[in-house]
Amino acid sequence: MIRQLTFCLSACAFLSGCVQAPKPYKRSATATPRPSTGKFWWGTSTASFQNEDRGVPAGSPYYFKTDWDVFAEEGHIPPRGDEATFSWTRFDKDVAALKKLGVNHYRFGIEWGRVEPKPGVFNEAAIRQYVQMARKLRAAGIEPIVTLWHFTFPDWLYDSKNKAQSNFLHPDVETAWKTYVTKVVGALSPHVKVYVPQNEPNGDLYIGYFGGHWPPGLLLTPGALKKATHVAVRMFRDAAGIIRRDRPDAVIMGIYSIPNWRKNLLQDPTQFVYNMMMHQNWDHLDRVADTMDVIGVNYYYSQDASVIRFIKRPHGELTSNYTQNGWEIDPEGLYETLMTVNKRYGKPIVISENGIGTQSEQKKIRYFREHVNQMRRAMNDGVDIRGYFPWTLIDNYEWAEGYAANFGLTHVDKKSLQLVIEPAGEWFQKFVRANPNP
Image (cartoon, rainbow, N blue to C red):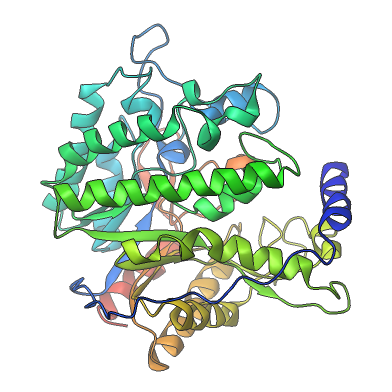
C-alpha cells in the first residue's frame, strides 16, 4: 500500500494537467481486405512462464532463467517454482483437456530463455519440442496460435545492477530479438499460421517502466517508458516482417490489455489519469496496427480512472461484483471496449482473454455467460468479432500475485498430474458444442 500510495501521489505531482488525450488513429487511405480466418475461434490460452515446468536440470548447459525468476529472487514478487503446471514435460495432458473442452484454437507461448539460454546459444531440442507441440495440436484438430513474447525475457537481458538498461532497454535486445524470432518462426512456419508477436506490451511497459511492480521495476521513469515503447514498437514491426517473409499467408494478431476506463471528473478533474490510461491503451497499438490482421482484446474489468481509485483498489472478493484480484466485474464494459476498438481501428477482433479469478465456479460461469452475451451484442451492432478465448486453460501462477487467483477451466490433480475439468470448463464445453457460431 505504501508503494502504491507513493506512486499515485508522485504521479499526481508530476502529471497533473500535463497529459493530453491521445490523438485519433489515422487509418490508411487504402482499404485492405479483411483476412479469412475460417470458422469462429472458440479457444483458450496459456503463457509459457505461467505453465511450463523448467524441464532442464540445474547444471545443464541449457538451464535457463527469466527476468521474472531473478525479479522474484530479488524479493519483489512471489516465486513461481520449477514445476508450474507441468505443461512442458506433460503437454499431452493439456492437449487431452483441450480436446475435451471442444475448442478449435489454442494459444501458447514460446519461452525465449528456454530457446536461447545464453546469448547466441540455442537449444535445438527445445525448438523441436515447440514444433512438436504445434503438430500435436493440429493432429487433435486444434489450430495453434503462437505467442513469441509473453512478458518474459532471458535473464541475460536483465541487469539487476542497471535496470535502466534491462529488457526492452538492453543495448542488445533488438538484435537478439530478430535472431530469436527468425530462428523460431523458421522452425514453426510449416505448422503455425497464426502468430502473436507480443502479448500485452502496453500493460507490461507501463507496469515495468513506470509503476515499478513488474521487471525491470522502474518507478516513475517517464523517459524510460517512452524509450522502451519505441523499442517495443520496432521489435513488433520487425517480428511481423520476419513472419510475413517466412509465411506470406500468416495471420498476425496483436494482443492488448484494454480495460474499460471510466472518467471521474470529481476525482480526476484535469483528466490526467484518464488520459494516461488512454495512452496505455493506444500508444503501442497505434504504431503497429497497420502490420496486423486481427486485434486481440484482453478484457477483464472496468475501473474509474482516478488516483483515489488506484489507492483504494479493493482486495479480494469483497462483494459478488469483484474478483480475487479486486477487479470490478462489468460485462457491459466489454461491449464498450469492443465498440471503441472497432471504431478506432476498423479491424477484425478476437477476444483473446476474458476471465475471472474466483473460488466460485458458479460465479465464473455467470461471468463467462454475461460476457459472451455482450460479445454477441457487439456483433449485432456491427463489430467483426472472430473469436472468444476464456482465460485460462489451467489454474496457474498469476504473475506478481503468485498462486492467488483461480482463473482456470481446469486444475492439475497433484497426485495423477492430470487436468481435472472444473464446472466452468464443463459449462464452456457444452456451450461451444451448442454454439459453433455465436
